[in-house]
Image (tube, rainbow, N blue to C red; front, side, top):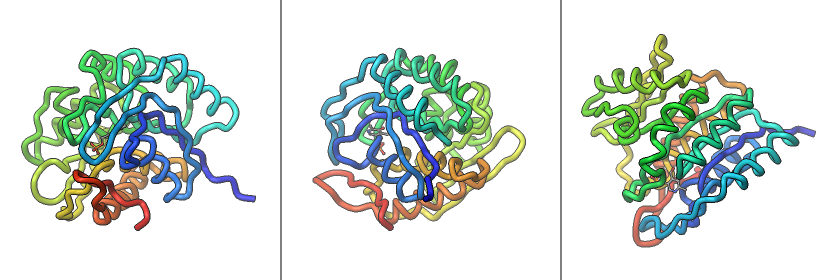
Length: 259
Ligand code: PLP
């Protein structure tokens, strides 16, 4: 009997099934791992945006985490929407006691412009959460929010990575997908530099890309990849998922996990 590697997502629910916990679990399954979830918040959400969000009590987050880690164990953890300073600090404390690799997606604002993290939580992300990360995966908006560095062209991404690494993650993956042209990301630990490039797909149905990428990195780390191998495989996965993104509802549809 084969027991697959176990991967834990600590994130919010997207009722529309495109992002958050739902995207994470689909990605983990697609990559041959067993996905588990610690729910931090519930969103009422669809292709048009976030209509409501309710955070869970820190005690509920702590209890879910302990249930999973103490019995089942984890080979990798991914964090997503953490909502408030209290939840960021709670999760950072829990992660400090885990030896598995941690992928931190410092989720700030959704594609529709809905805030998924309180501005008052940014400091806890910088000083408590990022130091626990094996890999941090900010997009350019999150880089600007966290570091003040505004990336306008590819060459600015080195400065952004250095600023993110300054908060303590082992690796920074700067996602340049919001720039024009090819989708270019920079992965670096301050010594090695890996540029990942994929042709841009002309597809507006990209809901859940960030969650999917971070979960794919975590799944591949759980399967035994090095960080550069995991990120390269995750980039390939998310590129395929974006190519297959499909229409749902009247707005922006989700990426596809069945490609
Ligand atoms: N909803 C939840 C619960 C999320 O965690 C995220 C992103 O991390 C989003 C929505 C936003 O997804 P997107 O910006 O891809 O539309």
